[in-house]
Image (cartoon, rainbow, N blue to C red):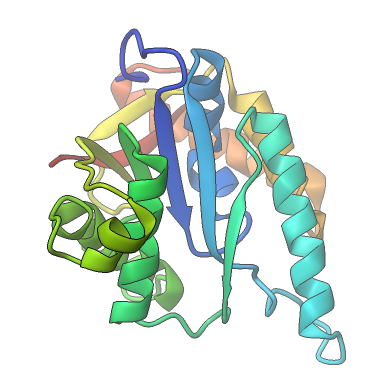
Length: 237
């Protein structure tokens, strides 16, 4: 399957991810395709990836600043809006009420017609999926249903900020070990790879990365009859 048909101008796709580069790695082609047909795609990054360095002497705030700059550049390549950062501690995310409130608030602010986030139920890779990915995917789904929908959940959002309830009709889960929805990214594969390569601090060999991600996209697309694809678990709420 490809992107939702005939999206209205400025229809919103909200992408909630744990770290910079998560989205480009697993959903960059879909993001680029949505943006090309008129969707307003906005990222919410729960952390700034400040532990994403091999240098033990490097200051975390410096790593975070670099990775946020890389994420902004990647969003420009893919046609997404300026990303938002919660700047929560990298590697220390918790499935708690604080994160649930933040993500519920984001859904009410952006009011997406489509939510993209991590698969927390059948994650890939099994057993060794990054804990932050699992936490973000689980809490993002909980925020979408039922908390963002129900007016008595976090009532201060409505009372104090006038953020009315919102029901997100559709969710695509990336990094899934049980995908059932394939997005044709043949036309946006080069754009996806270019976006991923903006994360220079996370790329040891740009040529190998481009080769490997191209091969993976082709392998993912083959069962669906696409030249290249990304795979998601699709939910309707």
